[in-house]
Each structure stands twice: as structure tokens, then as C-alpha cells.
Image (cartoon, rainbow, N blue to C red; front, side):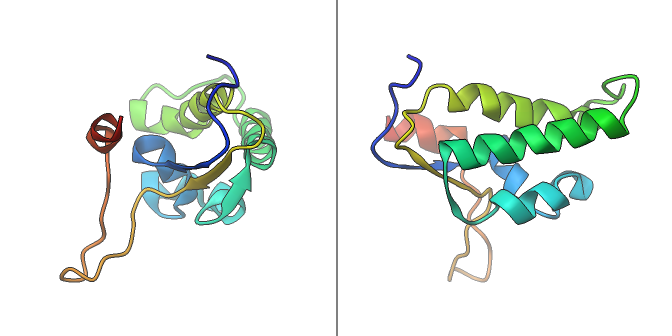
Length: 120
């Protein structure tokens, strides 16, 4: 399947979509979200930003992953998205966003995996 998804725009939602938010996960991705959040990126641009984030994390975090699961997301979510990027063709464009504005009562729309399942 490597490189088979392409020639289109893909929205990164659910937990990996949180990488584009400055406030999700106790602001763990605030710096990363400035680079990737709410903007259309190529596969290469997104991968580069994720690699930089992981390199900074590794330098700032001697000893590896934290013991509590939410703190582990700072490394595991970017690594997961990097692995998923391998499925996309180099022509793919990606938009990283977990919440979408809505005119319905001022509440944001927060799609999850079931939307992706429905669309397939």
C-alpha cells in the first residue's frame, strides 16, 4: 500500500489531527501546530515538521517515554502520523485539523474515525 493514496487532499482528523492544535493534549504540540495546523501541506513538508518535532523531543527528553499515557502522545502521535504518511503518494496534500468551525450553536465539529469509515 505504500505510496498508493494520492492525487488529492486529505484531512488528518481524530487524534493525529490534534497535532495541528495549540491547545490539545495540554498544549504539548503548540510549537508543532504553528508549522502544520490549519494549512495545506505536502507530504514532504508535513514529514519534515514531524521529524523536527521528534528530534526536539528526543533532545529535551532523556530517558524516553513518560510513564503516563497522555504524556507519551508527544512522541507517539507524530511517529504514528509519519508512518501513515508512507501510504500517501508524493502528490498528496494534507490538512491537519481536529476541530472544524460550525455555525450550529457556536459548537465546533470534531470528526472521528467513524466518519472515515462511513466515507469509505
